[in-house]
Amino acid sequence: MSSPPPPGIYVPVPTFFASKSSSAYDAAIPPADIATQSAHAIYLAKSGIKGLVIFGSTGESVHIHPRDRRAVLQGVRDALVHEGFRDYPIIAGTATASIEETVEQLTDAKEAGAQWGMVLAPGYNAAVTPQEGIVGWFTAVADRSPIPILVYHFPGVSNMVKVTPATFATLAAHRNVVGCKLSHGDVSLLTQIALNPAIDAARFHVFTGLGQQLLPVVGVGCVGAIDASAGFFPKSLVRLLELAGKTRPTEAEARERRELQYKVSCMEEIVVKHGIVGIKEATSRLRGFGDVDGSRLPLHGTIQGGENEWKNWEGVLAALEEVEKRL
Image 1 (tube, rainbow, N blue to C red):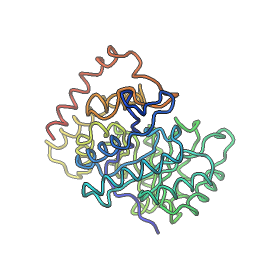
Image 2 (image 1 turned 120 degrees about the horizontal axis):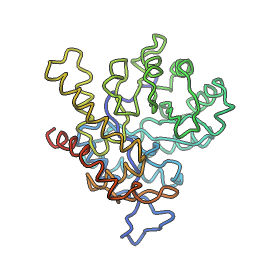
Image 3 (image 1 turned 90 degrees about the horizontal axis):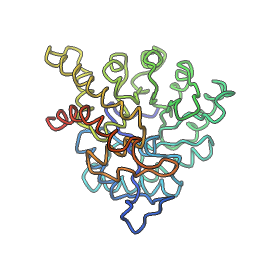
């Protein structure tokens, strides 16, 4: 049986593209900026982040040509090894509905140094896809994948496709399916997966994709988060998970984790409202990685509302920045 990624906070990193000031810049298809990608990865590793998801939804997986995926993955792996993070966890995302192409991407990911794959549930035909079809599709991928996979359930980017707790229980029995990322707000569904006695929690790890629900979901068996805001507030999310996992917190620790969860939840609303564009702008403004408007088409520009909208978030971000600097 394959092993799951270890518990912790993971970052679904944005894919960085060449700056507008670069001679290689192309407004329609800006090339990947592997140097910035690697620098951001090293920053996160040094900040206590357990591992990376490269080419998840935040990484604009569907905007990247397959030939560029391998170069980015290999570049990040080489940079991490050079900095002493030899076996640092890398999870490679996929977002295609083709079984063959998904397996090809997972094979390339392994050869580039990724240890796991995170496979988005196929949603193109969501309205007419039965749960038996979901089980069969993931089983076929898992049978053929050279690396263990996590089931990625994000209805918002996959045509509202449903993956039921019963389907997760069936897939969790597969030797090469080792966990899931749940990017929806339904704590009850997460609970029905993470606490299902039919699922071996030691080899099937449940991660939330939402840092704003981290404290409550850890109490029902979630082992961590794959959370985009940890890309610019890494220490705060790592600390929140540490506090959430304490079974007998002191009064001071209980108060700290409540206050920290509140600040994280308020901050994460910028991701809820502005998505990838907001994540990239926050990463650039707060940590200096990439352009504030560094996404590929059809994404475009900065957050809607420009500077006035950014100012609306300054108080919320400053409250968590104070924590980040203190940690």
